[in-house]
Length: 365
Image 1: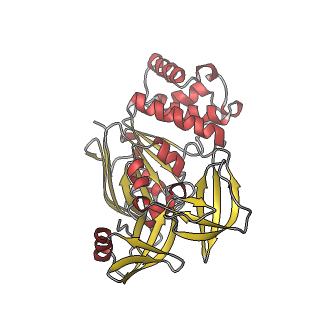
Image 2 (image 1 turned 90 degrees about the vertical axis):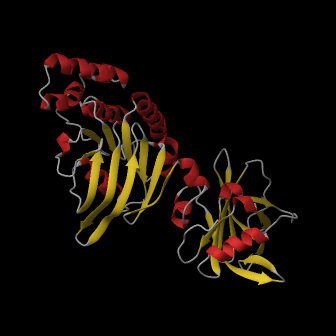
Image 3 (image 1 turned 180 degrees about the vertical axis):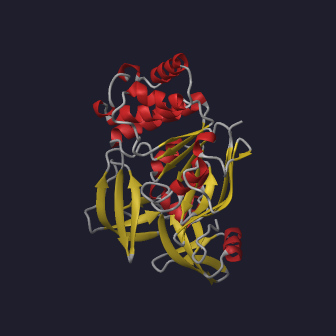
């Protein structure tokens, strides 16, 4: 078993709370991503697990062993940094061999392990080269190899793909995911790229301001965001948000946004009224769940001005303006659109609508 448990982790830098009583568990062989914007505490959390930062409070367990007081070399983890941190004066072979030499392994064992890992990562033809003679993708493979050659219990990765170009990054994330699954190494991976997190993770911990706001599978986090931050952070383009009031007219309940009223069935209305802390809520709907038409249909919700059209190849992002809101819709390249400045009708289905409390920003439905 190589599971990791973090319990009430807290870290403060100069009165700034970087990590605020974070708790989570990574199962044996699981690929977990810490996801969030810059400054959310994800890298600090990773560095505490690695032993590069000392937590102010809380406990860190690796394989059920408390490691708070252990130095990094005794935690049986391997860390891959954003910068790769390769030794420029050493060959690829020596970079891979370095952690094994530090452990004073026999030369034959070092040679066997280095060649084994190099073949696995398809860099065995590069062993005599120096880092400056390698491409970005090759350097990244060497950094992975140096972590892998030690046979660690846990991989810790801090944005290892961020220095690669977009095409290579997409290719390498697939390669890295396959490698992790083949080797079954427990992995904690830090990134600010939500597409990377969704593509690679078994579970994602979405972080902001030192807190974990939701910890679940990519599917659940996308389909059922726990709060407005998660809903807005996950998805490209991000979720649309519109403020609305809960109003009752003639024994019917509506969500009144000013430029439209959305009727609620009685059962749904009772849930919203019982859970909302005030009469104000926020409606969230994803651009890909939204459709537009030039003519009003029975299920059309409101009318908006066609503001900008962004062709993206496989789809088109349409920006609509209504009042103070700029709403994004994802549609097909074959959709016939009127000229910019014209009006269109907008529809989003009730079963795909998310309703959040405007005060707490937590999900109601």
